[in-house]
Image 1: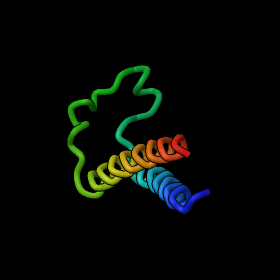
Image 2: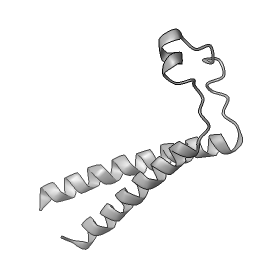
Image 3: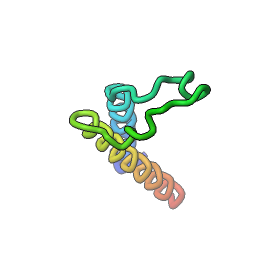
Length: 81
């Protein structure tokens, strides 16, 4: 196992853990399964994230991109070896 595999593996693990933490830290916007079945009227407020919730959502998206890029990088590099 090369050093790049270890480094990218650590990046993947850290990204996964931070995605879970940031996702759980965000305020719940919907009402769960009952809103999915019965309908929810909060579609108009969906784009109005403010403050800490907006920052957490942004960091979660950035970490998702980092996760996907690192996963593709590991896949490409391991296919070459």
